[in-house]
Image (cartoon, rainbow, N blue to C red; front, side, top):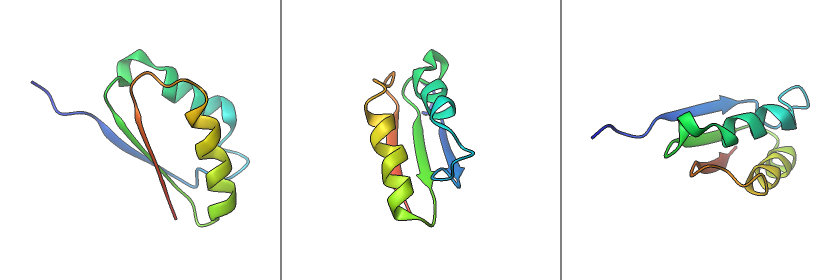
Length: 67
């Protein structure tokens, strides 16, 4: 049994990160069971990205957000 992949995106609240990037990550079947941590120093923009990620119907990816 393998452990879930854990990865972090630093600066996830920036405009250059992009909604399409998050959507692609969350829809990847290869990442099923993974943990994705979104990190940014701007809590407001990070929350916007996190909420968009929640609504993309991820493929069993645990989505965390922190500043």
